[in-house]
Amino acid sequence: EVQLVESGGGLVKPGGSLRLSCAASGFTFSSYSMSWVRQAPGKGLEWVAWISPSSTYIHYADSVKGRFTISRDSAKNSLYLQMNSLRAEDTAVYYCVRLESGGSLAAVLDYWGQGTLVTVSS
Amino acid sequence: SYELTQPPSVSVSPGQTASITCSGDKLGNKYTCWYQQKPGQSPVLVIYQDTKRPSGIPERFSGSSSGNTATLTISGTQAMDEADYYCQAWDSSAGVFGGGTKLTVL
Image (cartoon, rainbow over all chains, first blue to last red; front, side, top):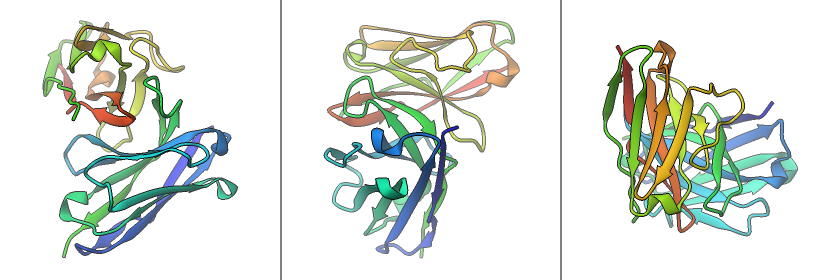
């Protein structure tokens, strides 16, 4: 069974930093692209970033480019999101998502974690 | 940047057919996925690559896409189908979501 468990969320002041982690199990982590998707309270889904299996390809949404860094450690079956220069508008639930066929138009966000809440407030 | 447009809300009576549209420039040239999200839960993939259903998704869920519009159709809608539905596609390696449609079954 595919499981994705996020951690690291919490309350942070504007301008601060936070690192999210996602522990993956139930599939061959090193074979799949991975992605982060977020959802502000009461709002819709927003794609944040994705990373290819070997970290060769990485793409970010314009809204986080230059502030967020996605990375992975296949030895630990883990995905990360380093978030710097946080703003109030980054407040959201952040989901770790497995990405089938990342980089192609046929890519699919097929399995989602339960999410971790990040609140940016003074 | 690429945009996907969905109606904010759709209502349907139990047992009837619900259709939720998603519009985007030449969307038919891309693949569309659909996600269902119930209150307090994570999104669940219900349709991928325009028309395919993941295992475990009921047959009453179907998808189509042509021109500038993709459509999620729920036949014989049940009360349990009441949820928010999001369309999603990829444009230049960036993920794009529609704004979401709240499906009400009444």
